[in-house]
Image (cartoon, rainbow, N blue to C red; front, side, top):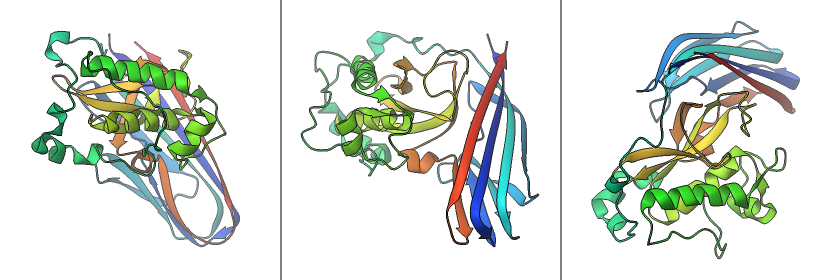
Length: 282
């Protein structure tokens, strides 16, 4: 059964010294795809700064804001209504998934086609001799990825405040704690190391279901499963992405999917506060 979601995103920026000019890019608009249909988009800011829709390098909708007047604070508010169709992540024939064979994944055409999501990035690069998860050649690709999802879920403890958006996996694996982007980066790094294309996904979670990471924008991963295509995995909650996951965008890692980026002309520090509220009805 389809769900009607209302999503509210708010951000508040405070600057220690007046900013003379600034621009921001928001990557927060839910994607329209075969399971998601946008009904309404509203956006505003407290300074009535000019804004417009655009697209990023991966083709996802962004909202660009530019302010040319001096300010010490600014707030942004976005509201989206979205119809999400029911998604069953297990609606497939397991016999269509071939056994895991790393040699089959070394085909040059396959690697060239998916090289963007096979190459390690600074945020998904695994440290040497980590003793991380190893794929089992006796299980198919989907089974291995499901096992990896569980392994990452158990390997890390969900703990906000200990890592940042640019924390490398070397530090994450040392403290064995982190938040959704750390869980996703670890899953992606290990999948890529085994020849499976994997990409970082940002979006929203159905709140009130007890999921970790639902208070802010959430992150999970998509892996290319031979015979099935791209499948979503949420290692933070040990789930396959389904009806409760509302996709915004994907990229190589968090850097491609940051919900807000900005360029500010001024001095001093700034403080930001972001909140997400997701409500639904059938």
